[in-house]
Amino acid sequence: QVQLQESGPGLVKPSQTLSLTCTVSGGSISSGGYYWSWIRQHPGKGLEWIGYIYYSGSTYYNPSLKSRVTISVDTSKNQFSLKLSSVTAADTAVYYCARVKGYAPSNYFDYWGQGTLVTVSS
Amino acid sequence: QSVLTQPPSVSGAPGQRVTISCTGSSSNIGAGYDVHWYQQLPGTAPKLLIYGNSNRPSGVPDRFSGSKSGTSASLAITGLQAEDEADYYCQSYDSSLSGPWVFGGGTKLTVL
Image (tube, chains in turn brown, blue):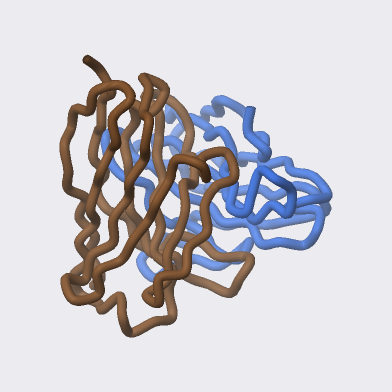
């Protein structure tokens, strides 16, 4: 059973960089076959896909966030990470990491982390 | 506003059947891309409910079913139970600048 767990600061100051890590257990990122993704949910709102990474390091980002997002992978630790720069209060959200399955482009998210709330405030 | 449109809320009594619609356009559902559904119980992460329009992952009761036609998709829940009260989201691929993967705005299901 694959499990994902997000970790990182719950409070970030405006204009700083949000950094989160997702640790995967029960499966190896480097085995390939899956993308690994970040998704966020603003308080009381719907879901927004942020971007994905493959074990090789190839990435794809949501066009609306692309200029501020960097996703990286550390296969030795079986982790992938999210960095979101120049944050504002509008970036306050629950951030989820998830495994992407299926055949492109009709992929879907089959395993999710429990989510971590990040608040942007001074 | 979401690329995929869902009703904000639906409700039904225990034992009844409810449906949740997900309306897209020619750049997503209408282009033939699959629709997937997620269930989010209060205070928890979303859970995959239906993938590839109508397939259920192992462990999902057959009370849940999905379908797709034209530019829309639907999630049906039969034999409604109190534990089904949750938010439901559809998701698909979109070939416009909104994509590639987009979600509906979510539907709150209330079991009366």
